[in-house]
Length: 498
Length: 110
Image (cartoon, rainbow over the protein chains, first blue to last red):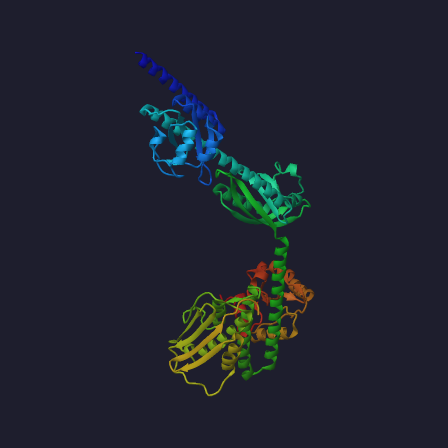
């Protein structure tokens, strides 16, 4: 009966101890408090006055974190000693009834016996099944651990292990938040005097932060940022598309780029290109947008100015060509002259058409397909007899003019003597890029009258064989095959202004 | 007819007269062109777009008011004269065939 009462009383004490442990672990925010609560529970339920808790450090060395009743010498000498390696999966507790009966080396036995320890227990602390540390119990006498005591020890180890994990996660979260705060401060320092406009908005699109350049542009102080309504500065004609762009990007939490006019403090509208992306909290929650505005007003004006100059240049060139045309008209009056004047005009017109294409592209380059289409429009209005086949290629201005004029000559020749002089003939114009940088273009006629190699060389042949080859810096082969004229052009592709 | 370049004007006049057109003008500057546009009697006009650095727009506006058709002769691209998108374009340099096409649009055969 006495034994049973003792058991009942100790059961109540154990429950009390476990309850207190659970409660303390639940409330604590400090890892040291976790250790203290753990040691209190261990010493009060496992019949020992001496105990310790150890954790692996970053170098995977087992270190004492909290101890009861151990000498400093003992801690120093046995630190790092562990039956498990760091991260080992599903470790099992070890209980040593008598250290003298183990295979441990003598020097360890000596240290343990000198500390007046004979029996000791190793209980792993685990996180998701892996060892992160252990707690130890120490006894002066030989001792056997009951199954019940083992259950208690495992329960305590679980509780302590879980709390260590929870507090470490909390520590990491706080460190991440501190890092975010630091980076926010760094961002402010960097952005404040940057020579572009930088801003942060909250998730509703209100201003959180505007750097100095942007505040100055809108003429507001730092205190006014939070209440500033940037929407009111949009140009009425641009407000709709800017708002649509910003709202869509905010809803989808995606980066965006939008250009529009905004009124500055002087009442002038400036064209700004905004590039922005969403930013989030450490936990991934969408907080708003962070963006940069670049003032492209001058850039746009310069582009408009440049376009105006090119239009003017085109106008003058065309007027000069018209004048040349009028002079030829005056010079070549009469029946024979008028036929020459027509040929002359056609050549002039092909040159003028190439000029127009180049003007459209600011005299940087012209697309080969359009050059060909323009040059061939006269003979093939419906596009049925001349087939164009090749990739998108752009030619430099000099190459464009040469190709336009040479193709005009080939076309004229085909209409007078070749495949386009009768109903059955056709032309295939085929081009490709060799090794990515060499253009190979073939003009192949078929279905026309039998071809004879001409005895002399006219302007057309001169234009194709000499001028084209020279202006393209390549080679041109005219091959008068019986079934149809074939012209092959090979030239390195030039890009950009020459 | 409005064209500030004498030789070009002479050629255009020649082309037009070849088609039996009686030419009023040519006007070589905007003031003469405006006077003709307001007061002269004619069926259609061919206008140079840039006359000694001045754009032809007031003349075109005056003709539009009088419901007289006109074509624009220009070295500019058609986007530069987008305000008169209905007017046929006579792209410089032009030949007799180009003038014929413009006349066909100004005087459609019914």
